[in-house]
Image (cartoon, rainbow, N blue to C red):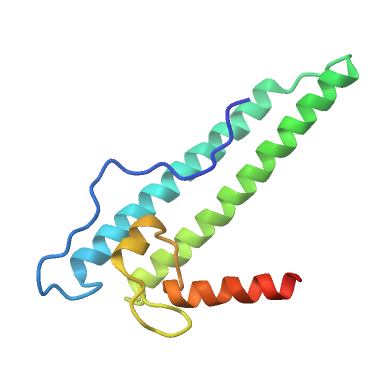
Length: 144
């Protein structure tokens, strides 16, 4: 089986650099992030298709229980990775809908700008860095 994907491949494109005085999430910026999200979604879809194809081709019944267990473990890991990718595709679709509604790039909690650098790093971000930090602190407190 192939190595699991731990992160989405970075595009060879440079980060978006706004022109001085350019409106935040104006048409050019929205088009840039729409392109990033569409490419991400396409790559993830191709990975899922490749995995399904590989799983069909590599299904072998091993007589040795250790070999069978290894194959099942690899399959379980692969399926978990594909599930994460399926969820990320769903998130990409949600962000593309936000772009169409011109709501993309603004925090779901407080409504301020998420920021270009944060969106370049994580195009599916829905919270500004402050709200995300507070949410993580709350999660840690609830886990105790």
